Image (cartoon, rainbow, N blue to C red; front, top):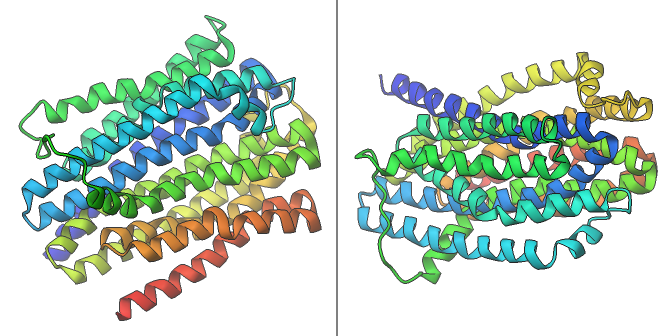
Length: 435
């Protein structure tokens, strides 16, 4: 009976969270679709150059949200309710401090940042506009990411999903209105994206305006020790999200030299589809996190192992289905984002889809195992996995393989990196399980 209850709870949290995360990832996918149709290859290139900064903002929000909500759930499991409220309050303080820094960067340094990201004269203005506006909306993005995690961990995954989906659908509708009828160009695309978390926050506000809310803001002096603990638990989520941005910056730099703006536009199609796929695995990982943190806090070790098994089996089934779709339907999928029917773009992106997405079962394992470690307060192995994916392996691998195999090497560097990291993740799991 206990196993059946655990399985039911697992699917409730995971399915709701997958739906919400897919909706959240559609922020950028909607931009990709409407920008490619409204502004062509140059618009797509500008979007792809600017998107890594969105990954930094989103990753920062997830770092505070996942780290704070994990610690909150552990305290709730231990029935330390005062400490749970302190954790929430401390998380809000440090989250808004970083959000203000992002805003100031958008106001004063967006031009220098655009140059740093490699935008040439053809796409400079569009890239700068996207960067500046996305940075100005950083407080909304980060508050939304943080509160979604707390609402979900507070036993309300359904409202967290509704908030994410409402924001995403609003983004899609506003994208169309701003780019086509109102002819607002790239500014319209980024404005629609920026308004989406504001709408999501409005939906989420229902949770703390009702008796369902268990977390409360209390007046405290920010604790450096608690802040360090929150960041330590949240860093793997930050690096996982930031890895997408780092990989995109490195790949953009390499591809600009190999294939120019058309190559970057083609990679933009692959990379943005990758964000959606990764969001599914993130949905599984974040869906298991509240349950894992709670059973860990109450000392139920066998339940932890059972939840991990459910997550990995679900991931493998989904991975097989996703890869078959990309392998069999690469041509029509790329065509959706290739409104100008650019033949080089089509060929590069099709090849990329088939090679790049061989990585997905390894990506799924790596994303799921990190929250497993952090939910049980083992931050070190999660940080090792995240750093390897985001920096230590992928960057030298991309440069080395692109030198040997040109574009094929660029595409191969992602699956090879994720495979190596998966092997390391399995070794770390076995080591810490023995302890």
